Figure 1 (cartoon, rainbow, N blue to C red):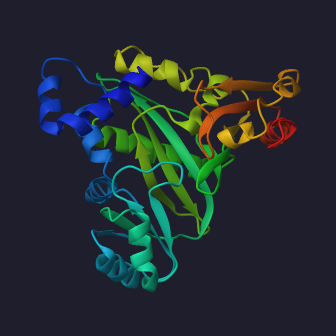
Figure 2 (figure 1 turned 90 degrees about the vertical axis):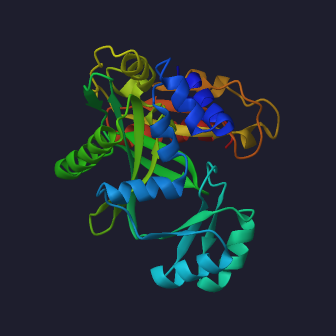
Figure 3 (figure 1 turned 180 degrees about the vertical axis):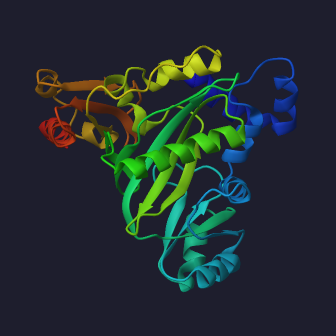
Length: 312
């Protein structure tokens, strides 16, 4: 089903939203084409979030270098330009230190329509996953705290170790978005936490998510089982946290010197290895490590040590 969601997304790109809606009238599609068409374009997504009152950082839509420059002048300070469509793991975006850098940023995006976002003073990056079945029942996973390197997720851990009120607010935002957009399936809501304690929505992903691979060991129900339950309109599983878990991504760069020495991590206590059967190439996610621990700190230390043992 997870693969099927991605296939449906690609097909909507090819055949258009109108045709996808016609298919939906005959065959259930979960998530619905309306959800995908709202989310897959960043400008449309951000407009939808604004119309529904969800908190965001300052942003502007821009279709050319001049508009990017004007947006940067209006927003003030350092900004980041992101292609409205496509882009993943740092691709399809460029820094915008000053308005004078607009032409370079537009060229870096290949001249594509974009959104310009003001960079925020961040305390943390978070994500929350919510599952919603067609009959309306929802289940929200605990928040994950995420650490990025070069705009690619590096380390993620559950629980996020947030104050209880902040954790509740993050989960409420995800639940409210799922209800407002009419989700059927699972939705990851990426959030920014600023140093003054504000939560802002960064991005939505209506599919299983890298930051919730930890649910396989951290929660009573993992994200993949929850997707099947939600898409089939079955009772949703418990999202109760059972133990702290940390994730470390493995990139294709790890294969530069030949096959990694997997035996170094396979006998490490509390460490689990997952490979995706993808061709390794630089900056491409080709697997991950999970580590359990009595505390988040112990889980993070274990997963870092395991990855270090592989030589990366």
